[in-house]
Image 1 (cartoon, rainbow, N blue to C red):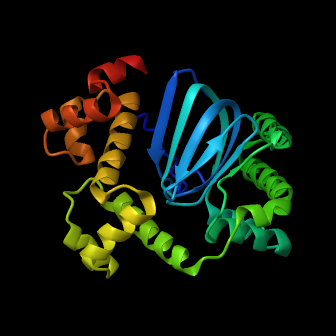
Image 2 (cartoon, rainbow, N blue to C red; image 1 turned 135 degrees about the horizontal axis):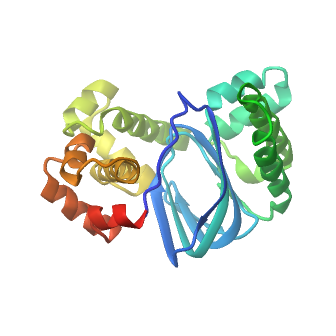
Length: 279
């Protein structure tokens, strides 16, 4: 399973990774973001799991992920996509002059979604292309304006699909909210030695409820997700620094280098050293 790097929306509230290409025959990622994500697929056939439901992916699909929403993408063959990630609070503020679109955006942001994959959205490719072109030509202080204009256009195009995308299920919203709280807590503490009781005290939820609701919402245990998050950070450090594997192991929360290497090999199918040589 490939673990992708993350975007820090506190430093970069809007981010575009245009026409990112992965040419492996089997590609997989399992993670969550603190930001919101609109992912457009140019090439790639596979599926994505969100909240224990699987959705098919094909060229022209738009994938929508909410903040801290765990998702697992599996693709066979080449995968080419443009990834638009953004801080929903910043966009919400920018949309104050557009009350109707702002209400629609808040629905996408905060409500339970029936569908996370909207097929046959080839017309959206032009918005990603236009944004990519504009970002290369405008000054840095004008780039946020271009992001907002692009997202406004995408939201307008998605609004007719509201009935297909959204549904209100209060019980499901509650469990998803709890899973989001857990994921957010992990984001703050994944480098520490994991203590379920500490999480329970901090979130004011019982240990049984935490374990049960997270597994029910994601299909994974809390421990499995913490390991994935640590490996995700380890991959980033292997890609961008010259720090030793044993140093990285300690930095991301593993107790020792040998255990880190064993888990890394089991999950990613290669050693930390080999991974660094491949990137």
